[in-house]
Length: 352
Image (cartoon, rainbow, N blue to C red; front, side):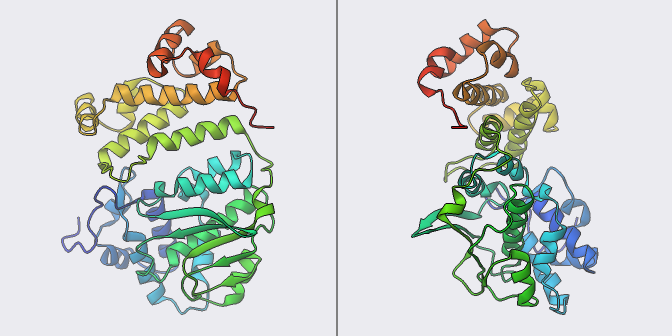
């Protein structure tokens, strides 16, 4: 571990998803920045930067980008090049929700609601202004790297909408809060629309008609499941101070649930914890591992009941119950209603 740490390990509420750091470091290395230079910029060694269980300090990607741009000649728009080369894995699962969303508006709303999955202090909004719909983003660290991380994020979302959602040219314009780093024509060619620099914040701007479009890969049932997954893994209370260990346990519960495994032991094992450690971590946040797994079961059950086409017997099996009677008792305990009573007024046809 570095003795002269310039960027401390993350405190709860001020972290980046490891995929953001990994993608940034990989691109910087490919553009000639050495690992020694990256370690000097971040105060972390290669082992810490590559720790798959970490949620690292939210300044790290910005410091890497500052070191990279200081070394670059400026003849290439590096943010655009990074977005071209970066896998959608860097979005930490958000791409799954986008591809299953019923409409582009649903996809953008999903992205803005869950932006903090990538960085705790990332502020994203979707708002209508006249005939326009604006997806806006701001992070307090944007000034560290003159908006390079924000630029990569905007370009990666543009790629996602083209390559996954199938929208060839969805934007009215792109707004970036700093000047270009590289030829402006590279930005215009990549985004395929006007690009405004020195704007108030990063914004992807659409027409209201565009965001109402149906997504050709829509799977509303799966979209509901992905939404619930993110609700489970992202605490929504502003006052919430969540430890990295608890985040890891949450993610393990959600990962096991996504594979249809609702055993508490499987979630604890996936988090790399002993049963005693998991109990202690959960208790510090007012819950238990068993209750966390129960919350995952409940969320998926509610989503499937609202969708309205899956039988209650099948839902019982899908959420980890050996028989429908045990599921009905558990659901009554969770909600105060039977599954059929819950489904009645909430049944929707999301394809309509």
